[in-house]
Length: 302
Image 1 (cartoon, helix red, strand yellow):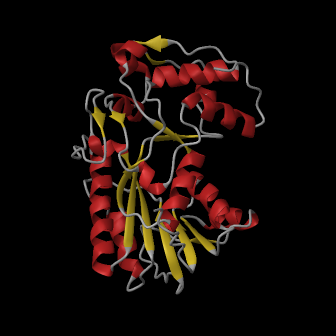
Image 2: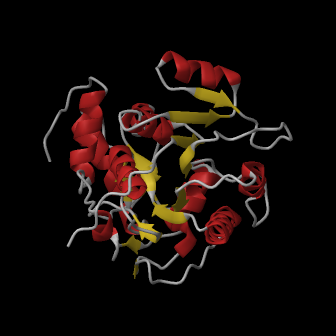
Image 3: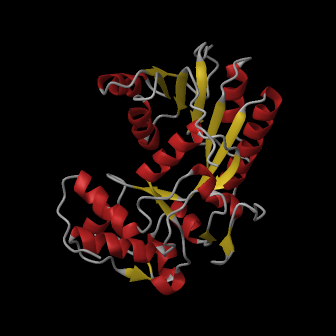
């Protein structure tokens, strides 16, 4: 028998309300009060103009801050800051919450915590093996959230997500500039998720009696070269030139090279517990929807 919804009462606080958070805030505002936290006053003012109540908070500062007294749900989207293997930003944020106790805490992590498997599959039962400090910070954050929730009897949900794409998050500018990509034979498989699928998973996690770690991915892992070529075809742009790994080290950014060094096929054993399946189960459908929302013509259907 399906478990009934556990829709939390009170304010839903979205910490780090950027690309994903703004879409979640608009979606969640129909269910109850929402408050967005952003780093800059200009960002808070921009969200307010869009009808999203927002507060500017320096996540790395010492400015006193008091969470809503009716806090019912917390979704944390802010990335770690600085160097090292610990998420000091999150640690500071958790201390600032004081004795407040929401009914549910959703933390957005990364599939990068699994490290490089050479394209082999991983699921929620696979042991984390982060290969760089950025992913180690995320794993540290997962542990901090789990302990914080356990100490306060708060239902905690961790989503491990891969690369997020959607409207205004496609490599269109890079394609127009003719920037190269690592050739397919040198690229391992990778997963993605459309931003609206991630938002729907967050909505489910807030309202359903689930807890623990979930992988959220679409159903078609493919290389960055294949994904970029797919975007080019659908957007009616020239296919990107492809370079070898040796060539990539001369022309691609260090951040992108770090991303490309790892590959894995991420699956989920637990997605059904959310009552969630991705609407955009293949990149092609998500790219088409993204181009349509941006008001751009779709050159081909694949």
